[in-house]
Image 1: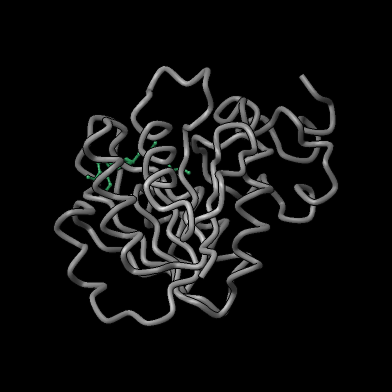
Image 2: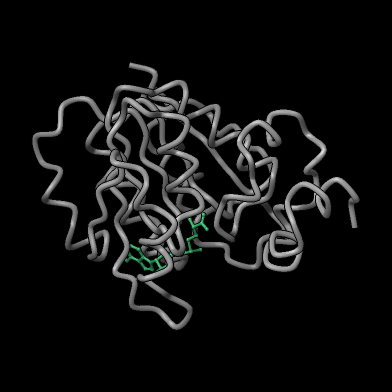
Length: 205
Ligand SMILES: C[S@@+](CC[C@H](N)C(=O)[O-])C[C@H]1O[C@@H](n2cnc3c(N)ncnc32)[C@H](O)[C@@H]1O
């Protein structure tokens, strides 16, 4: 295990978040003090990409589908301090812990938790004019992933990011949904760009 991770992040990060701890040498990751961050499902490379996306849309609304313990939520809130992060998650799954989610997120006034499924929450966003980013990491079956990208894509965000789209991922729903959605609207959305499991499409018009 990386010595710098041991000394700077403490053992809890190393034990709880092995994927996150892996490339901790990276300077930008040190800057965001990952030791203070919750455990989650993003690799370091994906955290860095999410940081970059958050910075690009700072000031515009961000909708996250699937927050779990709030790792991605906190990264978005930290790097888009002028944005509001609407964090949609029913927090009712097998591993869910809404108390831990809130402990991790409550110091960010720009996080608005919405305890509901993406389907139930969708109508809350009708009329939102300037959505910068929709980040999708909720239910991973194809129908749900397709629902999320199609119905939230209709809000015309500048960017849509979807997690778990790498070919090695055993869950094929997000990858198929992202690819199919972009292929149906090639003049409207850029070809997917991907960093490990994080796929991104940009609105072209
Ligand atoms: C892989 S975890 C999200 C990980 C998180 N983004 C992170 O950075 O660690 C998936 C989350 O999606 C949530 N979820 C499942 N079905 C959902 C749905 N229909 N709408 C919104 N969230 C959902 C689950 O409750 C779970 O917390």
